[in-house]
Image (cartoon, rainbow, N blue to C red; front, side, top):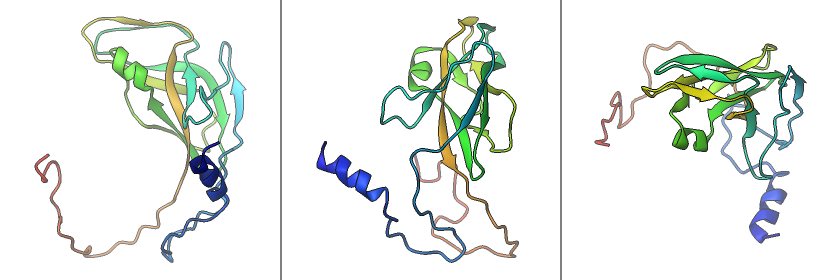
Length: 174
């Protein structure tokens, strides 16, 4: 095992030296193993990580679908999850799907809240002028477990100024 990996494992049990902000919670003892209860519908596969270092687990379709040209559809995975409070599952595209196919995850990243108990569906969009078929068992997306922070909104008359100000939407020339 490399020194980098050993140092990384050792660092997981130590709170990083981050400047404190009195209004923000401090993350301590972050676990890399978040328990997620999963109920499987008919034909569903247990989510799994393809490799030990992967951040996303694979999600598969439970039905084959014909997706018309330029159409969008919510596709069934047969997965139901009980996500612990304080976390969400983000649904993201798989790089191979994005590179090799004409379909995209339409609301990427999608959010599965900790209070949701329905079937996880993947919103897929066909961006081509050809009808495509996605067979049952297609590895369609990946899920990422992410901590959730809640904002405390404070209404003010003015915001602090910055060099950037209100410039956006390509204002830096790129």
